[in-house]
Structure formats: structure tokens, C-alpha cells
Length: 350
Image (cartoon, rainbow, N blue to C red; front, side, top):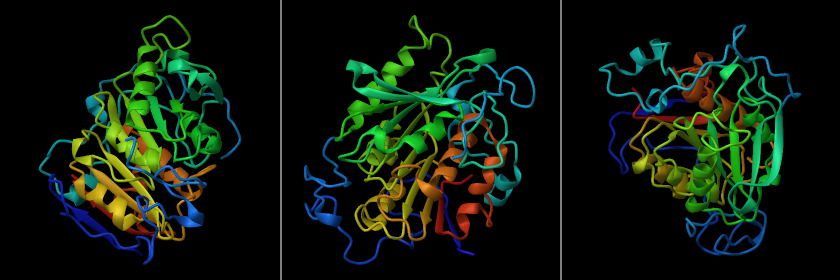
């Protein structure tokens, strides 16, 4: 079983456990103009890169609501899903506190497979958002039995659009989230923030979303270039948690809610050592850092493979208070603490 490193305290910088399982020697630098397959993230061409410039299962029928085990509830405050204040407990005690985190107040039906579709049937809406320059992934039916849907902003990797992540984003939407994703191939923090602000504003505007969103329980997610932008966007007052797949370095010292960082041992483009680990070191919030053995930089495209389930579990844990999702992150035998994962790291873990 891979070991788990835990770093206490909330200071930024290089404190905390070091991360093994980063990319090997000779990893391409996303600011060098030379990348895998000739990709140049500083405005070059190719399938994927990163730049600091600019910033499943079958579809199921929705069963949550006022009846049964997945009864819908009205939105709670954002603070419930934020990083837990100092409780005086050590890591072992926190693992034993199975009632936390409590989430934002909404509940969803339990799932056996976090990588599969949830209880909501997802749909895709093109050419929406500010200027019609965004794509939306959302549940087909909104607000059933008073359910409030958490708004999500997504950031693409450079040279890609939301159309290259259909299974990943549809799976997240099937768990009740409404995702606004910029169509830009050079996404940045401003675009992600504008999309999120627009989506939150729909909660009070006439239309499909009026009164059906949880505006104080938002999420920021992204990949590569968009992963760094997602961390930067995570400082938004409404964001309660952030997820970065193989992301560029972000301003994690400005976050106020928990952070999930995912990378792979074979990612020699946005290498862990040069980009993901510095974000981890800068974090002042509760952070989990998972490394998937053999995963290269393009792993999150499509359905995100083995990285999809932990991402969904993280969102369900912090937004809905899904206690079964703790199995991925808590305890010495957590699911991301053993094969096919390696070198799990935890920081500011209560």
C-alpha cells in the first residue's frame, strides 16, 4: 500500500510532505515552447498544453426529491462545505468523525459507483452563457421537490473545448450539478468567473433556473490550463470547493474551501514537480493530492478514466455531505492511498 503523507498547518510555501510519483526526468515544460508531440502551450498548436498566460454508466432517471432516501432539500449556507475550522482533533480523530463534512444542505441518493451516472438525466446546452460563448451540462429536470442545484464553472485545457470532455462533464451533471463551460481554447480565470457569475445570476432572473440554484454553494473545476484557472477562480466568494486535473500552478493561498489535486506519474507535459506540487505547497486549505500510476497528461480528456470517480466523490462529499465518499480520501487505507494510485498527500487535514 502506498504511504500517505499528511502536513498540518495552514501556511503556504514548501511546507508539507514531498510528492513522489511526479513526472520523470526530461518532462516537457509548459512555458518552454517545447512539449509532447511538439505542443507549445505559449500559443503553439497541438492537442494539449498549459499556459500561465491568460490567466459512466447509463443515464438514470432522477429519483431524488422529497421522498425516499434521496429527499431534496433547500440550499444551505456556503460555510458548511468550506474547510473545517480548527477543531482540536488530530487526523485520526477527524477520520472517526463520520458526520463531517456536512455539505451545503442538499441531499442526493446514495451511489455504489462514483464513476457512473447519478440520479439526474444530463443534457447538453450549446451556445449559452455570456455572449452565447459557453456550453452547459445540466440535469434535464431542474428544481424537482425544491432541490437546489450547485453551480459549477469548468475550465478546458489549452486548444480544447467542452466538446472533448462530454462523458466527464455529463457524469458530474448527472449528480445534480449545473456546469457552465467556456468554449474558449485559451480559457482563463476571467472567463471562468464570468461564466459562474452569469450562472449564479440566473437564480434570480426569469427563466429555467429561477429559484433552482444554490448560489452560495458553487464549485470550480478545470484541467491543465483550465486547472490552474480553476484554482485561481476558487477564491470566488461563492465557491466552496475546487478540483484541478493535471493543472498549472494556481493561487491556492487565496482559496477558502477544500482543494483536490489530481495528476499522473506519466504526465511529463504539465509535470507534477513543476506545476501541481507548487500549487499543493501554496495551499492554505484542506487539500488532497492524488497521483494515478501510468496516467499521462491527456488522461482527463473524454471521461477522465480512473480520475472521474474521485472527482465526483470529492464534489459529493463537500457539496452534499455524502459520507460514503470519505472512503476515497480519509484514513490510511483510503482508495486514493493504494493502487492504482500512489504517493497520496494530505495537507491542512483536520
